[in-house]
Image 1 (cartoon, one colour):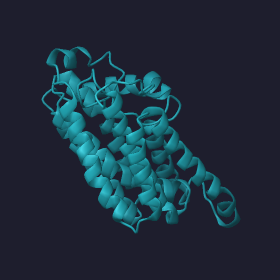
Image 2 (cartoon, helix red, strand yellow):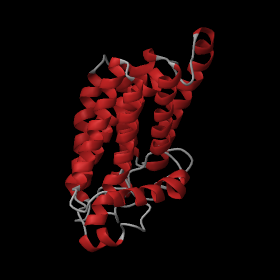
Image 3 (cartoon, helix red, strand yellow):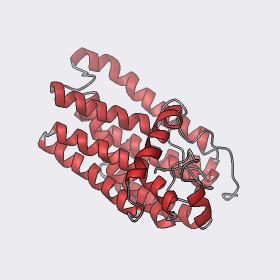
Length: 280
């Protein structure tokens, strides 16, 4: 049954466990206790939106600052929730909804425009990003824990790479890894195949349920064959249903658990800490 819990592997990267989580444990102490974690989540979403606007205007320094603020706040909202005993299902849904919309849009645009210098790949990148987020929350439905990436590379590493790419663009005016002419012809097919393989492996290793894998495969087929923006129109409601149903299936937040795990937990979910990791 869908409610059975299966192992979904490590939920955080080595970099997060060893460096980022301790850093944000200290940084979150700067927030007053009266600041609600959902306010931090909304500020992070505003940062992602501001980065998109800044990129549209060619303001690379502002885009870098806004996107970096987004993923820093994204790491702190869950810690603030446990620190203040305000973990909630609403926070879980809000957090992941912003990550799955503004976060995906900003990350994909940065990867295409400022990492590889290949804006024409944005539709492909968005399809991979949407597929990855759906896989993450289908894994949460199957195992109780959302999974983004591996122990070596996950969402945090991607966000840091995006910030680095924007910083490089601000300093030099050039993408971090410029794929031009013959280089693009030679490397892009391999990069695209590797990206598709990574998304497929993430689904196989974390979901492990045939009917859910079939549903994810159907979405991938939709991305490959349907006119744009039909995949986006399917993705939005599908993600919303997953977020709401996953939050409804989770146990109610425990105030004592939220407070006691504020400094010791290496997980980052806005949902009850005993059920999933997610974004902080």
